[in-house]
Length: 130
Image 1 (cartoon, helix red, strand yellow):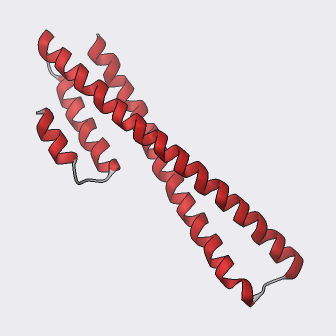
Image 2 (tube, helix red, strand yellow; image 1 turned 120 degrees about the vertical axis):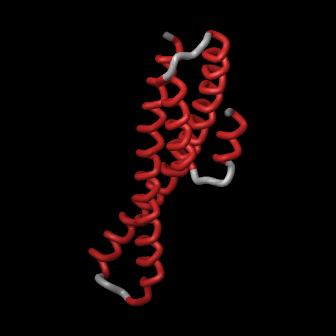
């Protein structure tokens, strides 16, 4: 089953991979596992959680970068608008500010998903240790 899950996850986005893995580990931990199978599932689970944690960390760095850039651009935008009013020459800057702000919002949403679902995987780690 391990190879099947890995192959299923190969070309999917991270949210689909986590959902698929949660379904898999929920199925495995809901039934009765023998001692050898429990060890194999626990090792695989540990590996997958480590992969998801790495993904979460990378997305944290990216999210913080985009949010910082968005905050700087919004501060410049606010200062520019308050000081000089609406200027047509600044339209590309205004568009860039809007794009980065919207992108930051999507990164925050994605990171929120990663954080919550990885935290949920820790419960399965506890189940496997029992």
